[in-house]
Image (tube, rainbow, N blue to C red; front, side, top):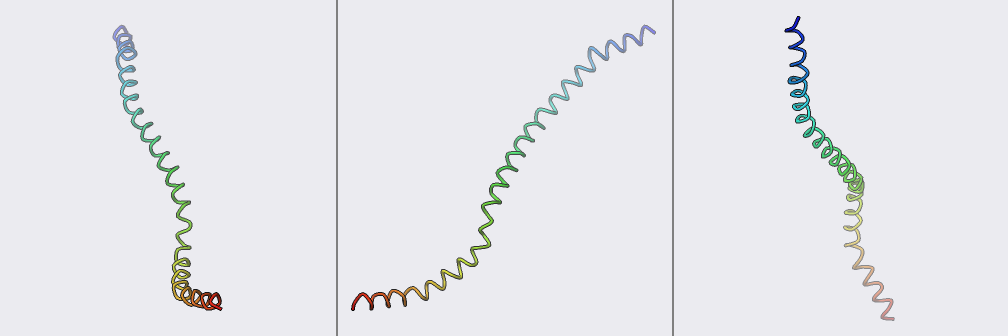
Length: 84
């Protein structure tokens, strides 16, 4: 009976603080990783919203190619009008 009490006392005095120490050493990096992961998530969502205009690049490329063809004709026509 006395040995059981000694075991319980050793458990409370030695084992439980040791477990709490190791738990703290485990949780501190895990919390730091969670903060970094949350930061990555916030910035990733912000970056994804800026990429919505990528689909419009195809249209922009098509229109700029068309402008390269028609702009010289427009400038020539305006030059003829202004020369009058």
